[in-house]
Image 1 (tube, rainbow over the protein chains, first blue to last red):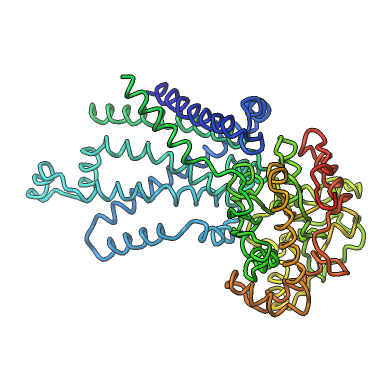
Image 2: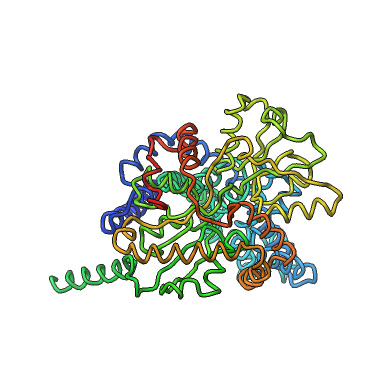
Length: 249
Length: 327
């Protein structure tokens, strides 16, 4: 599964680069508009180590941001599944926060937290958590009547048990959502770095854009893609493992 | 099978050709003029030309398009999306170093508006040595980094003798006094920041690198070599119209008309701020005799030399060969 993800990414990436190179040849464009293969390769060799460290820095924040957003989405989803006043209040707050564009909120975040790790983390989590929240709320609001009925009529139903039943019955869905949210966590971190950080691959891309250096951007995109493919592959593997363990327990 | 292949090829050709831009146009065709930045006082001459029919008088139908951080006029020239544009000198030099065939028609800013604001309560910067020990905001990867590093090198100040602070798009660290100097566009952001700090009882000063012999050229009007070769008459008429508009927009007697024009293109900025911005822009663009657009060849060559020193280009590009006006 992991290798399939990697080679599928490589196919997509190189098809994209080939399309750009075809346009370059077709329109006789200079290296300023679209860099040639040699320029891309030279930049790759020159920047690989530095960019890899930046991507790993971004991935580190993305992973923590994703874990944070999973916890947040689970907490809000579990509370928000209830049809109580507080449940709807939490839902409204969660939806409203998501409606604000991150670039408008970013200055407030930077005033409160500075432009270091905490801001990157918060923005990554904010971008990542909403789709997770929707999925968690969807799953947690859907009763599993066949099983829950027994506990209800015997008066043994507790909210923890309800959550467990619904999570177990939808484990495959949850694993897919969590794996998919890795993309959002990575994108969120890159956005945060692009807006206002001084580390990470988003920051490197911003500098490359300042310098009109598309070769650097292409190399950065390659490293982001390959790192994300590996991370998502690992998440899927962990999801399978958890499911097997839970089922056999 | 052969029929299907032919259909696919035809479809692919349609998709590619639909995305292809038109080539540089003839005198009768519409042309696009891509600015460097969004509509604000920095482009007063450009919008003045658009609003008051300067291009029409020269027989050209010009669409003036606002720029922004995601826009690059030189790329658009090559792709045929624009026939004229505004680019900073470093963009031009980088493009030349990568084989782009671009020509500079006029230099709009005679003094680079990219300067540093600082509180007047701090010791004044009268020599470059006065920068020692200060916390200086720079945008890593931006022109201000290049300029400041050149200044430090010129003054023999090691980077350890100052603290370089990474600048982002909001000014909070400067307001909160975390940095001593903050890079601003003197004519656009300068008046807004000055006003805010003055409201809090703080006066401000500006550190202008040009006062210390560092002339890093800012915005200039550019076109493609192809356009120069194929439409020299249209190029001449375009630049004549544009420079006439800039001259008139910056003439003090036309200030009210210029401000009314700006209000239509940039309704967000208060008129009194625009008035101050216009006054400062006049000082950065207009020469003492009222002329505009002079290409300062020495400044361009210095800009190229700076970029070589800072390793932003790997080999000289002979930028003087790409400068057109007066040849």
